[in-house]
Image (tube, rainbow, N blue to C red; front, top):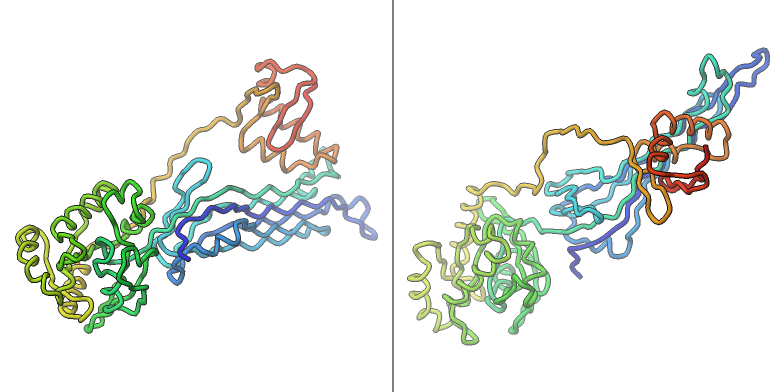
Amino acid sequence: MFFDKAKIYIKAGDGGNGCVAMRREKYVPEGGPWGGDGGRGGDVIFRADEGLRTLVDFRYKRHYKGERGRHGEGKNRHGASGGDLIIRVPAGTLIRDDDTGELIADLVKDGQEVVVARGGRGGRGNARFATPDRKAPKMAEKGEPGQERWLNMELKLLADVGLVGFPNAGKSTLISRVSAAKPKIADYPFTTITPNLGVVRVADQRSFVMADIPGLIEGAHAGSGLGHEFLRHLERTRLFIHVLDAAGSEGRDPVDDFQVINRELSLYNPALGEMPQVIAANKMDLASAADNLPRLQEACGSDYEIFPVSAVTGAGLDQLIYRVAELIEQLPPIMPEIMPQPVVHRVEPRFSVFREEGIYYVRGKEIERHVAMTDMENEEAVERLQWIINRMGVEEELKSAGIKVGDTVKIGKFEFEFYE
């Protein structure tokens, strides 16, 4: 089966916890704190791999988690960082955030990488909290949680040439004659129900990738037939070979077919309507094709190059393929949908407070990180958190919002009862 869409959950590794330890050695009285830091959690990285052609692997496994950092240890030994999780995806994969719809990455080159979730930093050990006033702290930080999110992936096949046309026009036969692709071929519409890729090699050592897209019909841009599911794959091609049934089989007219398909391409995406095209007038081995070819040349010959071919006998295919190879060398390479943008430093509030269904919510990356990294079972750690909350002005903001003693406050995944 061909899968070009997937939804997965990813979570980067949590940071390791810091260690609470005291130096205990002979002849070293009151040695002081000696707890090491936790290691950083592993990132989740997507890497484009041109050897993959489908997202089928993500149908059977939908949850991915990075490796956690090791905890800190005594003798001021820091924990090792967690290894990054590298997820291979086909070249041509678009990655979007499921909640916001934001386009995170467009991976079009083999080996191209993007970090989709950052690992949490390791918690600091108690040795890091020693001060002249507090020489023996008995607290350490927990590791920072790694980023987590749901992602939507969409594959748009990367090909130099796309075959377009009505069902039964001969696209699958053509690609089977000029490449090693072996699509299903039969004398009925919609034989091809998944895209097929083939590498076409020209005698002078040139080569290009050709995609056989399932046949389009009128109304494909609006969801009719199979076209709506696969039109997206044409957006990554550089040139179209418009395969027409020049013989007019099944009562069709090649001139009308050409106009209908181009109209569907433009309605789906105006850029597709402007894509360079050459016309393969197929089925020239049939007698009726000779009568339709002059009409086709009169209607389209001034704007498009027309190549009379027979995919069954192979007649005319060499001239078509050599010309396509020449045109591809003149066309620009495929570019990703998102280009590097200048870094813009946005000033965001440190936190925000709002009330919903009787609960006061405090939101903000900084305050949520402090809460998540606090060991709530450690009295010193809780006192430090309270000090941070006061210094940031969270308590004053809650009072301004109308909070009362006994009300519930939620910060991240933790709930607290407010008191003076």
